[in-house]
Length: 485
Image (cartoon, rainbow, N blue to C red; front, side, top):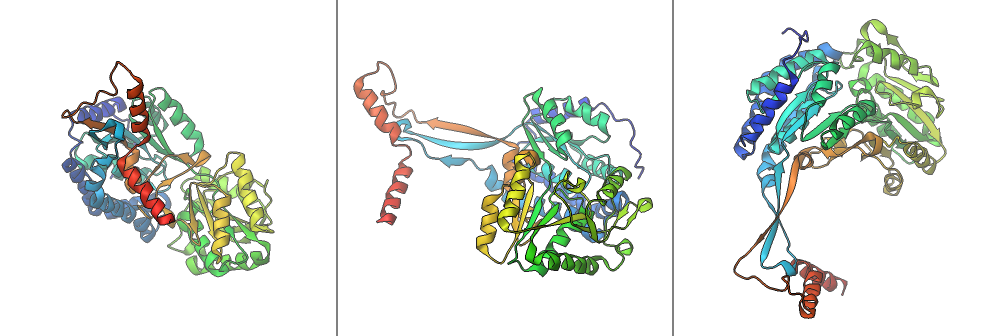
């Protein structure tokens, strides 16, 4: 395949075609949603080798890692969506206050229209296709934009989306100019995954059309290791979560706060597991990814000047290789602590207590750097609860890293600078749906208490009726009283 990015057809025309397809109503039936998702799944399986080749070409992604975190992850999400779609689409019946009887109330999930998905380069397959899966499941048309920083994968993804063969599901390939043109169009929802600088551009563009947005961003996600942690397990799981994809993961542990009594043991254990994962020379390992491009490589190389290199520190500009690196003696104002690292560099800071660790995280949050993920390691549930209650984050994992995003029953999203809105599973279906309130009244009875002329008796009845909301609430209240007794 030729991976050269050529001038695109009119972006506006693609968006208009998607909107025209949505306007026909073709995307709303469950049959269309299922068929489109099943076709996407088939294409992922048919083109598995080409996609794995493209991921390897873009940044040396090992095939096992690429399949697990990209293709397998996406197929699993499609399967989960197909298994639950019928239930998600059913109207949700809710209670009706006594004053508005006889009648019934329910909520209908309706598609919002045309959804724009703008994906990043670090997990270019799943972070493009998962939002598309959710939007399609909700009955929307979709215009997708893969990242130009992973050009081989972007070309394969555009080809895959074109092969779906439906104008309601289309893709735009290109760079800044194409993205700018895309954002000039009117959409009914935009989901952007990337950095906060571009997110502000997306929000400004969306504001022109009052378009709602979902922003999946990043930030410095901390791991906190208690003196009562299983230090060996903590080091192993943090090393895995940090160095998979060479640290180019938005929820990777960005730095570690370790209670002072176990600091040295933890740092030593990190070295042990880096060697176990990637050998004595990680540069020779087939399981270690490379940095995506030269600008990112040189940015990361400068961060190695912070603190003291405890493990790693080796770089090779020709192959964009940066070894799995652990830094100690890092100060809070060092450059490596001033930005999201997004690479295989892990600062480890010693703290006197868990309270000090929580305060450290909260100080950064107060400055606007609320983490996308938070990791707490302790054998004490009380300590883990203390960390979770004491520090805010988009998501969290106890005695583990990354895996909270793998459960489709949990939402994935940030808070503050780390993003807004969430998706995955039912949360994605809901994110791209309008939840329409419907109240249906019977004509068999037509009580006059709400109609003029207004009388004291009517007012008394209305006050009483509105205070008695849903009859089911009365039963629930009675049950609660019985339990207390």
